[in-house]
Length: 203
Image (cartoon, rainbow, N blue to C red; front, top):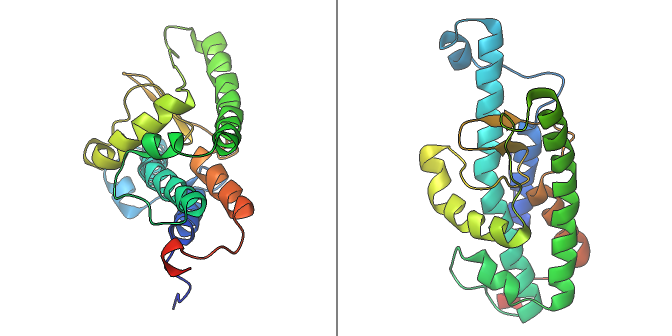
C-alpha cells in the first residue's frame, strides 16, 4: 500500500484514529496466538486480547490529542507549533471560542462515561467502582505525562480520561466500543472546523 497524502499533524492524527477505532471492542475480537498461548482458558485469552487492544488505543490517545491541538494552534496562529508535549499551555493560548468548543466536546464525552460509572457503582458498589473522571484541564495535563510515560508502564494513573477505558488505582475497566473517545471526536471536530487548510509553514 502506497500512501502519498502525508505531511500534516491532522492527517497523522486521522490515520491514528483509524487504528484506535479498529482496536475498539466490537462483536468479534480477533485473538492472537500469543494471547492464547499465555492464557489458561479461552475467556482468559479473550480478556488478555481485549485488554491489550484497549491499552494500545489508550497509548495512541494522547499522541492524537497532542497532534490535533498542535494543528489547531497552528491554524489559529499561522506558524508551526512549539516542540512541546505541554498541550495545556497550547490550549490556553487559543481563542476563548475555540477553548469553549473543545471543552464542550470533552464534557459530552465524559457524560457518557459518568453514566457507566454510576451504573457500575449501583451494581458493584461505590467502593469497587471508585472512578473519578478528569475535567479538561486535568485531562490535558494528564496528556503530557501519558505521551512521555504511559508506553513504558501501561498503567494509567490519576483520574480517568475518555479513552475507551476507565480506571482507579486498583482496576481498569474496558468499555464497549459505543463509548466516545475524545481523541477521535476531537480529530473529527478539527477536520470539520479547519477544512482544506494547508500547513502553516507552507502558506
